[in-house]
Length: 330
Image (cartoon, rainbow, N blue to C red; front, top):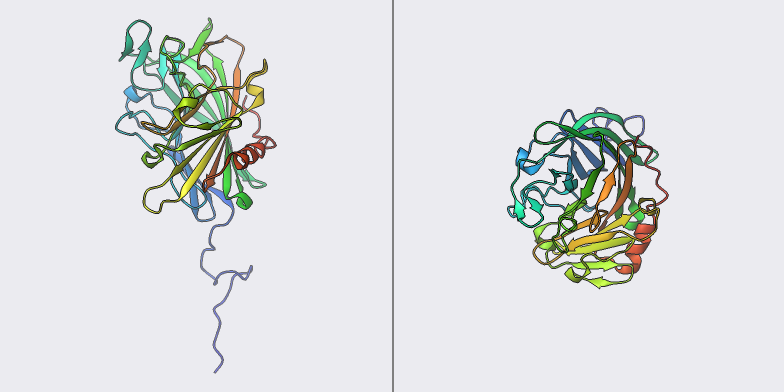
């Protein structure tokens, strides 16, 4: 007797009636909550655009968990030492009198103080959400409110994702355009602009897994750890290892040349000792006056790679980012 083969679908890949396995880059939209971005059967990131954090943590969209193509998690959510650290998030500590970072505010001459100034970034709508030609693009409108419900900033944000299977890596592009809603300039600063040395954090902030503490930092012209705090460069990479299986992962952060029309690379906020974190910090040591009618646009790229990469490999990954056009933000 001849065995009967199961019916197949028209593509000849799966038995008829069965759902085909996912392939390529795709998304799942959890309405009014988050976007999950997947490549084949691996979830690369979850973008929570409608957060539920308490006001003290300055509620704002964030990306967590973030995973490599192999599925290793390279982000940390709400650690006990800083509840307001959430994976990868656009977090500004000093926006005039307001705090869109979370927790206490550094006050010149006083130090860190808990003030009634924890603002929130609120989702207003999506202008685009699709996958075309191997690139996922998300265009979002947000409005920033002070703790007392005063509109502060309108933001247009774009996230773009594409995968480099040949390099065991994928790219996240983040573009933001900020528009001041006040009738006077609003200074965008950091604790360092308020007097605290080497605390220029304010910008696109990544908090790494606890096992990444003591990791290795690479730059175009240097390699080390915490001594690279505040150093300038076009990109910075962080190499860490995971608990359990012991594999390594590398994240490469790239500052776009268009962010600095006057020249000079960004200063980097980076720590490896107490915990792993990276922030390309455009307001590290000098506040930027965001004037009414003069929007500020900034772009950053993050490469998430399996394995421990060396400086040459990190530079090559950073070099692959520039040709991605994420689209317009305004």
